[in-house]
Amino acid sequence: MDLLRRSMTGIFVYAVLLPAVFWPFDFHLTEPELSRTFALSMFGISIIRLVHWFFTDRLYRYSPALWRNCFTIFSLGHASVLSLFFAMAMFDERFEPILHITMLAIGGIASSAIVALMPRISLALCNLIILLVPSIAAGFYLENKMPYAIMLLVYVSFIGLMGFRASKEYQRSFEIETQLDKQKKVLEQLNKIDALTGINNRGYFNIEFENQWQLASRNEYPLALLLIDIDHFKRFNDDHGHLCGDACLVHVASLISQQINRKTDVVARFGGEEFVVLLPSCNIREAEKVAEKIRSAIEANPCMYGEEKLSVTASLGVASLVPNADTESHMLIETADKAMYSAKSAGRNLVVSAASA
Ligand SMILES: Nc1nc2c(ncn2[C@@H]2O[C@H](COP(=O)(O)OP(=O)(O)OP(=O)(O)O)[C@@H](O)[C@H]2O)c(=O)[nH]1
Image (tube, rainbow, N blue to C red; front, side, top):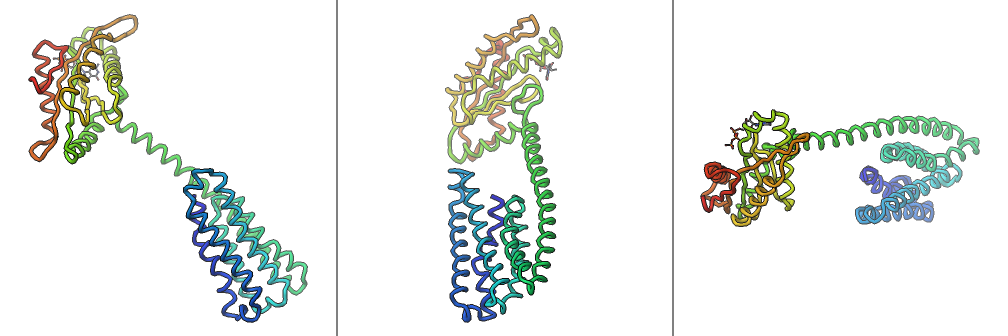
């Protein structure tokens, strides 16, 4: 695709290049047929290349190989017409009045072709060979055109070499850019993940919560929140050690995640032994059901630590509201927090909903 973007200027320039060479020297008047044939061929290929550009997304999606082959054929098509023109300019006496301007055009076109096609150096060099080798051969064949041929040969070798080096640098910077892109994605991912449990961290939750709050407010749908706190976790740590406590947190995080089905729901570690679940478009009754599913999953699945089977329970607070002008996002967290503390006071291993708290 970069290749196409880089070639766009050339496609427009090629469409008007030959008339620009003919007109100042009245070549179109002295040789109307020749001028017309070459100018129309170049113009025609430019039109085909514009059609290719117009349908590029569709064609690329259909077949990248077909897109690439079309690009190569059209690009070499332009080079072939120009090559014939340059070779005839050497051979044919009728081109004598425009020979110098043609030499100038060769230089410009060959350089711009190398620059534009640098991402595919094989195509760039092929283009260069098609463009210049016939006129160089013609120049060597005709004695009076030998200086032109030598000049073109030196020129083609020089820009071929420069193009080759520049292409290597292009590939290198392309690789670096791709690597940086990958690393950026990994860093972004690490930034939102809790290192211990592997679920989203508090920072990510805060951002997502604000986004969902705005969305729910605009579309006037409810936003539910569950706060989940492991019961007597201090005692758990004291009895079994901190490493076992860590394993328990991983275990509970995984159980919570397993109970959440919708892609838009967000599970995160809120801090310490506390977890949060955000359920967009979910009223209090639906949220209570999800909370109960989580509570019973934690109760029913003890944490395995080595040979030990350690029971865990959690207390859950549930809240849901439709955001409006009178509410603020922290209110939802505070309401769920109060409900969760009610669950603790009521004996733990319970779901308490703000609706009934
Ligand atoms: N192993 C481990 N422990 C943690 C981590 N984060 C917080 N804790 C511990 O979690 C415990 C939380 O204790 P408390 O806030 O007193 O709550 P609790 O013992 O669960 O009591 P209730 O919530 O009332 O049931 C503390 O001992 C913290 O050290 C962690 O990442 N790993």
